Length: 235
Image (tube, rainbow, N blue to C red; front, top):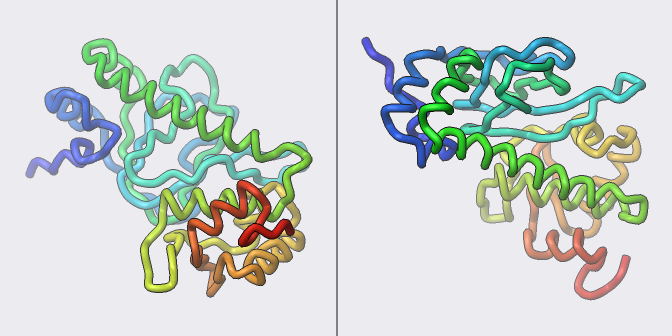
């Protein structure tokens, strides 16, 4: 039985011709991965294009001390590759943080389809430009003068925009976020990150329950990470 083409429902392919997504679907395969699976290894050849269908994955690298630094959290519809041309090895890792279904297609076939349909090429460029924009925003928030509380607030606010679910109490981030994971996002020690979370909790900005974080007031959170103020008061 012919399996339904799941690519056509993804935002990444909304402007791509149906015949192109169908050809792409036929030339690749869907794979299921448990949580904690390494999809892409840094410094290894990357001859496959990976697209997240369900679940979530992280893009990260290792510091010179071997500590993980999370760069992106990506959900359904995300292009997981840093590049699609198989001309040089990957420079980052990609790992699932939930049970995931991922579509995999040989890079050579993917590029061949890009050559025949500019809308597919445009979709790839748009996805990669968005990653560059996000990276620039992250770098802006890593300057020495920014308080770590504001940096954490900014990251949590962004996660609430990308993976948030509305609840009576606020926006629940639909990702398990243990302190160690948050520390890897910040590039900070676990103990320091725990104190930062307590600070945001004491300020009434977040609530933490069993690795789940709720943004109690997104507008207040946004104001805080941009200004360092709560209700007009500097902290």
